[in-house]
Image (cartoon, rainbow, N blue to C red):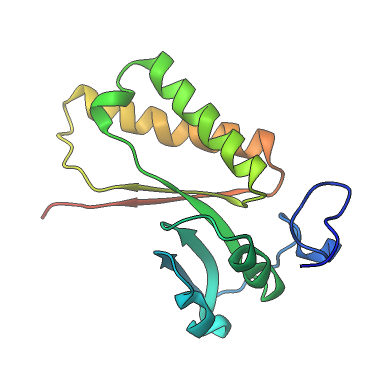
Length: 152
């Protein structure tokens, strides 16, 4: 890597920083689970990389150079977010981490069954709303992706 810009962003080029991405219809989200597998991705098809492995500033800058965003993994036990104070602390921690790592947002990946009449259902709804509001307020141009496992 070259010299870190005065903003602290890991990417050398100003145009690679968060928030400077056009929309690419027909492209997709991929999940990075670590190591250097991202070097073999078909970057012409990727809009967003959700980092599920260890943070890799090289991946972040490479993705940015290809016009893709990089977002945090956002998984949490639904029982833990029923309490609004605990939920707010979780959201604040994720926003701080995204800012520290110059990420472009978060991918909420909740793979737990939720009964529509449960407190977890209400907490999940609040989590999505509060996460979206905080990220958009704190990180200009950020995105919040939501992935749930749905029972049939």
